[in-house]
Length: 106
Image 1 (cartoon, helix red, strand yellow):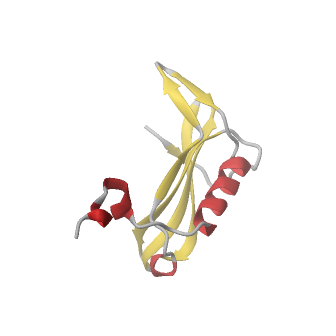
Image 2 (image 1 turned 30 degrees about the horizontal axis):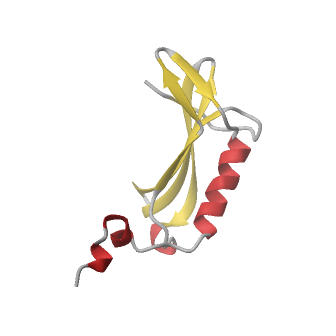
């Protein structure tokens, strides 16, 4: 079970960061969702990035740690995962059909 939080810190351990299109009272929006570690539990923080139609890149998730047994091991901070996400969003997209070779079928 996860808990919610209303703030995060740049140097805080971050289990993962996702950018997701989620329904809100304002319609379909792009949210950046952080899972940080608080008191040995995962806590969720999300920020609204704007209308989902304004984002050409697909949704994505960036792992910042792993769970082994009952222990959480963290490798990245909020600031590090945010930088990776910003870089990913700035990159030119690719045709997903290339991944399975569908671009070669005529």
